[in-house]
Amino acid sequence: MGREGDEEEVSRPWIDVSVTLHTGMVSWPGDPPVSIVPFKEIARGGSSNVSKLSMGAHTGTHMDAPRHFFTTARGLDTMPLAATIGPARVIEIRDRESIKVEELHCHRIRRGERILFKTYGSAARWRRPDFDRNYVYVTAEAARFLAERGVRIVGVDYLSVGGYKKDGAETHRALLGAGIWIIEGLNLSAIKPGRYDLVCLPLRILASDGAPARAALRARF
Ligand SMILES: [Zn+2]
Image (tube, rainbow, N blue to C red):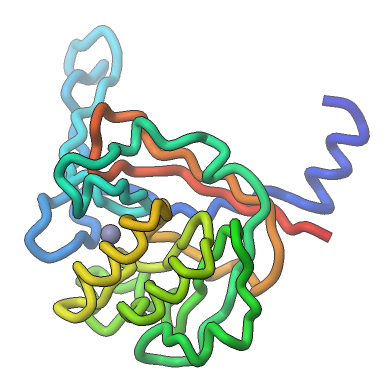
């Protein structure tokens, strides 16, 4: 990389906004637990170190495909890469319960935008070992509003875009049914609201309802 590239990396570094996958980490209640264990080990006479991964498709930082709520709909393997590579906006939500239409009105959301929501208490929430039911979710009404606006991506900073036993299926259906790809489980604790470049690449799993993803943001000026 040339000098120019190095300077850009210093002034506008890529910030990893994915959570680290590890055995026993928090997952959605009722989903498979996360287990990452040695399958082959050099220390035990193996020719190399190879881990065995076991987890639900909606673990940690991950994406949802339409197939998550519509059985014959598209899987994540068909998502165009352009959906999750490009400009994005991080919006900080003040409401401590949910993301509501009234608050969204203040942000002049436009067609084609990639919108990531930074919500109250999320940094502390990720530090908890257990599942927190009181995360800030997108109401079904706000999901319909985002679908009408024609946003491209919606991202949230805990394990579901919908609430825990409230607006779960409705919120997902409103977004996924409108062709909006969903990113869940982002860690936005180091990110201020504003405009960024986004890269988020979910694993390419055939006809998948969801897949773990690596996501990064870089400030735009
Ligand atoms: Zn979801």
